[in-house]
Image (cartoon, rainbow, N blue to C red):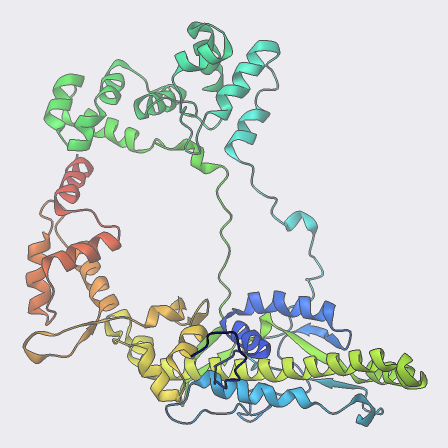
Length: 504
């Protein structure tokens, strides 16, 4: 048999994710605030899309999918066992064949689409009349910038040394290098470096520039005029304070129990990390995507439409562009007509994708509230074990679709604001065939037991295991320890030691 190159034709089937399906999946994963940024970029790319004059809010010409139940394009439901993303691709793919712009009604000026339900009280696009730019919080200065601003009185070599020392102070306010290393690098004496460090240690916040915790506390005690010989000995023996050895501390400081209590109270008022009061990242408020409220008929689930713009397809502008392109005959006007058709097709697809996104989120949230109804009525102790598969089976969608919907989405209810992932927890098996409990509910029960314990007789992990077993929760000791550490609760030994110091 001769060997040589040849050409063969083979047919094969492959699963390809179309660009439109990828975009739809991305929209489904985004939160409302992230979707707002994505729509803003689309408004710049597509000249036929505009934002409604009233901007944001629920007051519109057409109701959203949560107000009447049948508004907007219908979302195609996948058959049982079929991937929901396949149905999504099938539905969104139908928009590719949008009718040409020449067939559109020119008299129809604009078409308004409202994708989400009425969930908030009114439009939020315009600032209040009494709004001033001085109300906008300026970006907080870092610790280094705060310290550098306090070096205005220094000049020459002292200023250079101070700026170098400031550059070596970490975010907690501590000097990260020894003075002898700094002096050798700058070519100065250690005494001179220490003199400039003393100047830096007078800057605000008090305690900055310290080389260890004892020096940091001592600087704050000096500032408060409380650095007497007794406080000096107490600060020099912080290891005994950590161990709760109060008898040894009273002997070293030569004070009675009442004076020791005052000194410990004073010590507790000092900040061990003074630098952290500057340069912290600004806390951003969480904007909920879903509202759950109690009604006479049960629990109502609404989408937060106040964070999304209401988009408009400007038919008048589209008609003018079509007339201009039609006036140019032959190949001259073909690129313009293709561009208009492409923009209109993209706008129509975007409207349908947003409608389906709203419907999908609403379905998942409604099923979640139905499964966790006891949580909304009675609290976290009644949170049920729940998996993505259970919700997916209820709404007849794929598990991956539910996972995308619950990512980066927040729900607001009477009990606060929760991430949708919060409601999906593993099950803790009950004892003697009892009902399973949610892992989050068990964690909160551990926290409640520890908060109710006698301070000087804290509950050990073994004791917590026995108490939880008596309540019907079968857990191992290592599981209890893991849950306790996840809650940021120290061990029983540390809690007892802190209680002794607190009692003093």
